Picture 1 (cartoon, rainbow, N blue to C red):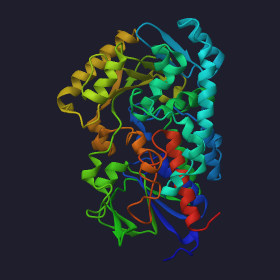
Picture 2 (tube, rainbow, N blue to C red):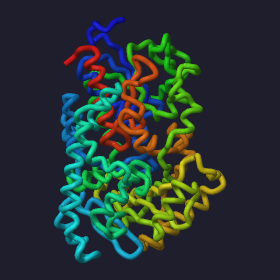
Picture 3 (cartoon, rainbow, N blue to C red):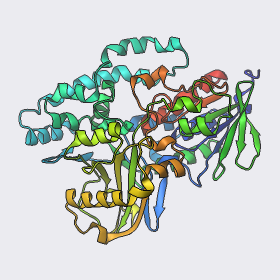
Picture 4 (cartoon, rainbow, N blue to C red):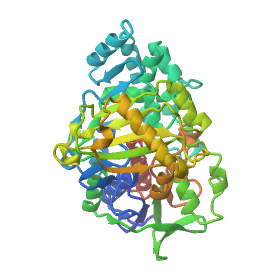
Length: 501
């Protein structure tokens, strides 16, 4: 054992330069650890990287920045200031929600949102304050639980979690909780669609996640100029300035596991590099199938992963246009038969004729993403993951046409296709093959009660000693803020293990 060695001599490998891995890299390097980060691609970020199509720049994955104070804290942990590295723009409205017969501009200025509710559902605006007060209380109880590690069963019965238990809405779904506030189905959906951030249905997502809408309204939604991928660029800069080394285009083939403990990594060219600890930032289920030597795993061996509940996937369109449309920065369009669309995705495993979709038209806010007078438009359509029997090689082109026709109709832009200069499609198979996402489940493991807190893969990985997890597949879960928190939790656990302040 070498537990008494100085942290300056502790060698830590991080597999993957996504936001969780970069959080750990910049914090641990700041605390004096020797940190090496291995990234398959030529740039940092993973699903939070950018995509360049000619003169047009897109975020690959996340586009919403929520809980900015948490991001600020993470940079402070690493001895840095987020405002020095990133240019933030607070959006108002945060986004526009479009239903079959009405639209609503959602603002973190509650009076504006109250007026919007009064406009579309007169008499229902008084319910907003009840929602806000109740979910604020839930959040205050849940936040300490999300900041904890759950490395032992006793931690599952912490005082914080016991205090939070009455506020978990156990046995209720997000939609049921929101319907309790707003009564009207459409208004309930307007405050429950955030379950899609977890890749889940509002009719299945645990009721505690009703607080996601509160988080948006309480803390606002931000854009980072250049795209949310700028977050990964900035974090990589801080990690390097703190002393970490980032190896791009350097895939890890497997972990070195000896006598039940991680001892290092094997690179794709066969080179073996020894480390005291290894942090996995790759997609959790993909990593279990591809990075861990055979015979090591029991709880998470590949055949057991098939029983895990997964998020949905997404069909992506990245469109470089020679025109800027008068549309909001963020806009969500609900299928006319929204619940049927959701059931197609999560229960029937089929592609809906009537789709829901999200459009980011960030060029109305950020001129850096496209040439003057042009725009970089990002389209996301929730679809089933690859456990569904959909042949994407056969259906991708027809589904693309369906998506474009729906956008032209719902967004009232019939000339869309004539303005496309650059285009890229990512299907669920693309997520699997190009971004190493297990079953194309873009939002990782589902967030059912059976896969949360102690029951989710733990930050100190329970199956291999000296092995740690960060990212959406571990506690506290998917979404940029919680992924950053996973990196902070893991960094603090490693720091305590080696008795550093």
